[in-house]
Amino acid sequence: MGGGVVGICVALCLQRSGRSVTVLERTLPGDGASGHNGGVLSIGDCAPIAMPGVLGSVPRMLRDPLSPFAISWPYLPRISPWLLRFIRAGRRAEVERIAAAIAALMDAALPSYRALITGTEAEPWFRPGGLLYGYATDESFAAAQYGIGLRERQGLSVKVLDDEAITTLDPLLAGRFRHGVYLPDAHHTPEPGEFTRALARVFLDGGGQLEIATVTGFETNGDVIEGVNTTSGRRLAGEVVLAAGAWSRDLARQLGARVPLDTERGYGVRVPGAGFGLRFPVISGDYHIALSPELRGIRIVGTVEFGGLTAPPKRERAQRLEAAARRIFPELSTKGAPWWMSYRPSMPDSLPVIGRAPRYSNAYLAFGHGHRGIAQAAITGRLISDLADGNESSFDLAPYRPERFSLRR
Image (cartoon, rainbow, N blue to C red; front, side, top):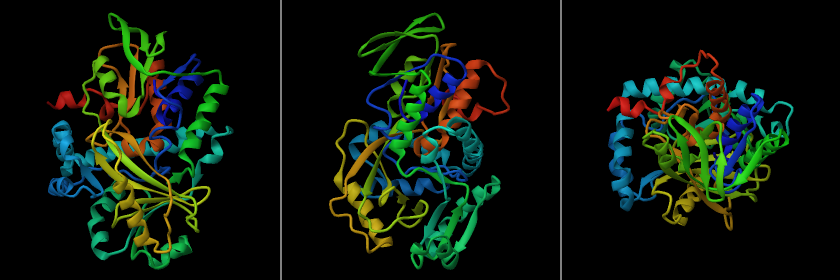
């Protein structure tokens, strides 16, 4: 269930294991968060959202509605349990453990994608080029030192650059940053929506089925799921995978998994008339925004707001992105640029839920990838397929198990 990039990659992997697979999706592949993001496959990055010192930043999140990480006051009672777990995940020992689990997925991300898309129409949308974190001030670069060390301790490829070295990578960036951290293994897609739809077409061409319907519940017999109830009727099921992104929490509870999944409302702006193009994605360490290359122009993303699935989007959040981008590129004109808001499935420890559903032997969970869904989709599909096939794996799934929060209590 779920036609985002994670759900489609899971479906492809299960299809290639010999199964007949149907994807149930609320809208169309690529219409949600999978098509509305920076298109960055941040291979080589393992830093969780919650870092040491996060507790001190929470009051600022509550005071400033335009901070890069904001919480809507009316939503505070709902988000408070998630927020407490988020703060706990920012303890140094936890950060190191979580970073190792993120790095393990990222290390397997590229091989998993290559096995899935080589020779298909999705392959041209998958591009190398690296990822640059740029820092305009000595202060912002100093604040990034723990994150740099965190990546290095996980054995990831990290290059620290000065302005001259940044200019060599892309002359357009000359004089814009004093310091840079370059992750050479990162990839990107210039059109994440098209990439997701290309993957979906590969799935359909292989005999897969796609139905537009909203899942409402399950029909069970003991520890087995026998059917899936949807807004268009009942579907028989031999196996079920829940990969519904930000809409997964209530359905996961029906499958016996109580997980603290919440929703990041992520904003973005497309600037087709930017007048310049980037060679690779750039993330500002000063303003916490990402600028990514598109086929024509650039895409600006980055602000995160916790406000649930029903509150209306806020234009001023997108305007903050535009203002921050102009501080880096004063020549940039965003007049008339279309903007959007999407819903990202967010876990407080920055780790996805990947594993068997606690209550049912033929149900699997694959959601909660947050900012890394497009990077971790293919490896998630491989892991779910291995679980369903009963294959022994050297990959340790314990950090991603759905029961991990209840065990801590």
